[in-house]
Length: 294
Image (cartoon, rainbow, N blue to C red; front, side, top):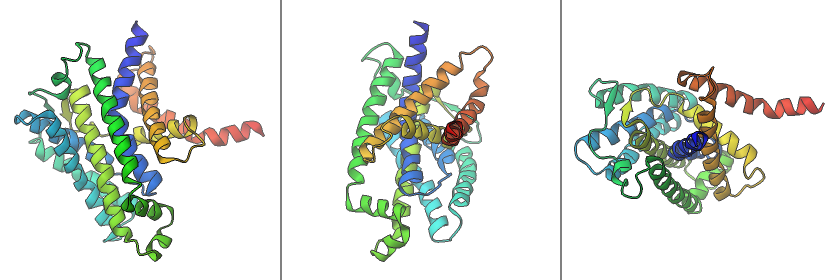
């Protein structure tokens, strides 16, 4: 029973992080843009969600507004990179650093703001009294809807333009595609998903917005991508399969972390160390496998 509870906890938490992984997948794999804005966007989404709920706004509407607000950091990063010609990684880092101060301002210089109103988790408690099952039910629903919508979006004209920009920017420009616009649209979309992740985590896991909750978000997303790409639908190139793989990779990652933290020698404060070691191991896996064969 104890291990079942750990597993359910990992699944519930994983579902909350799936949108982050999809957002990072869009940036790093489809657009080929190493966006580092995620940490600021995730925290912004949580902060906006909590502040609006505490003002009496419906938790679902608060989450939607938080996602819309998350487009702003993405747009800023896109402008810095495309219009002002700053290196993509540096553009994201600059926006991320700026968002720390912005988030603190919104939080009225407090490091933590607790949810005082009713969250989505509480609103759907009538389904079952088990909070984990509520999280799994709502998380699964949100993930399925998101995957369907993202898959549809990338089958549209602008979606194909984004794919072309990521595959070959020079060819895209020669085909009359405005790559500046595709960068702006993609980073706005991905950071909206990441901000929505912050809102979900605040409502379902933390019960609050914390100024440091976005730290390590990119590494978590990359770890999930690695698991999904290496072990799930490895040889599938279809976007729909890739999104499902990323989703399962996120859930598997959170379950692995949940089980790792019950090891006596490890503490909750070791989470970032565990993540870093795991990602490094997965990145080195192809090289180690080749050397072992040799």
